[in-house]
Length: 94
Length: 248
Image 1: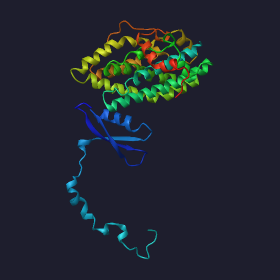
Image 2 (image 1 turned 180 degrees about the vertical axis):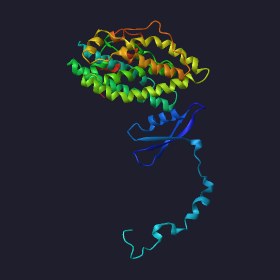
Image 3 (image 1 turned 45 degrees about the horizontal axis):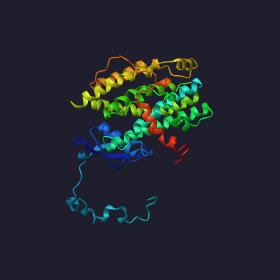
Image 4 (image 1 turned 90 degrees about the vertical axis):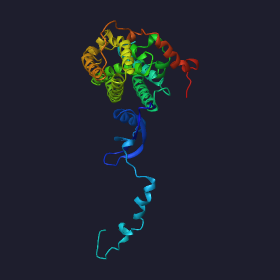
């Protein structure tokens, strides 16, 4: 597309109440065009009830070189999982 | 031919011919995204045409919907002339479709109240689609008109050239009047002021000026067409003409 078109990430909500899910992206020069392009590309087969479009440059992503610092520390913290705990015999309905 | 049949064919023909024009954009759209948008619109129009042709075939009693679409000649098509105009550049297509979409949206809104239940149901089904078409072409018209030093004069020229084909949309002839008094047809003249509102509002946002009403082309509803329709039909009907009854 023309040089003045941005990439917009598209999120579709398949049903009311469910989370919007990332489905892909479109090129568009403005937000109205982005929404219409997303509608035309990603909801042709009745996929959605709501569309979000977000300019790709507005999304802040963690960097892969940071992944150790970001994610490894949670590896050895088993106590953050509910299965780490023994249920007391007296506790019911858990 | 009964008045109701001819009235139904006029609607079907306008949808089919505009659909064929839009399908000519397939794989030639200015961007991948817009290419798909234009093809979607073509499919919507073919779907609408199909509904009205099925009804026309029922009224006719002999010809099928396919016969009506593929085996009639130029003078037997009753579409508005504006829909047969060539695509030109993207701005030409947007202007042509915008002017027609505005009419179509108001027309179907009224036709949905028709005493003819089939026409009313077909119209009601088409409104949502046409509403989206109008939205799409309005947004593009605003973008192009309020765009660049190149796009504004280009699309203003498109508007000036195509304006003469808008008069026909609001004409009422003896068939319209006969069916209007039976509560079936739309009073085209009555939707003109609302069409003016839509057009004026959008042109203002698009920083385009509305052309003066001058010479207005007419005759499509009676089977009189511009030189463009014959070429369109030749391409559209080629397969059925060369290989009668060919099936997929």
